[in-house]
Figure 1 (cartoon, helix red, strand yellow):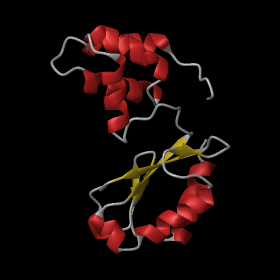
Figure 2: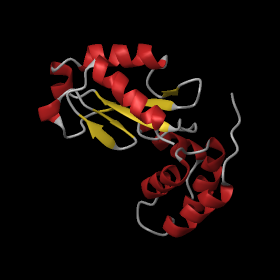
Figure 3: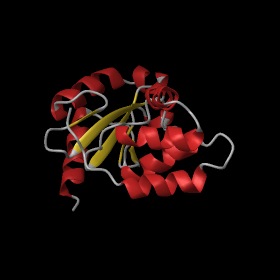
Length: 158
């Protein structure tokens, strides 16, 4: 397992800001992921202690929701829609192409650290299926050729 340097002060700041609100665990996990891009495994004991929960309870929530990641994301995060509308418009073949093109599966990051691939279950862009996002920007009617263009656009960003 690769060890990553993580910002403990960012984690403790998020915990301190949110720990007193009802149902604080999910807001804290979102806050940490928004701040660092992922939830460092070493932050689980800090979260558990602050909320008087077991480490297993915190870990269980992190692993239950596919949105949360426990490794740093790539420079760009790509969410590929797998909902019904996108499936009916060919997202399965697009998914196969994207995985082959990037050389990664879902929840993985390319070897060069440029792209992380994540599944998502509806982007609300059903009229333009199949859809995906790159760093939050949505693209519709994505074909393999359009995906290649989107990928090059993302690579060209500084």
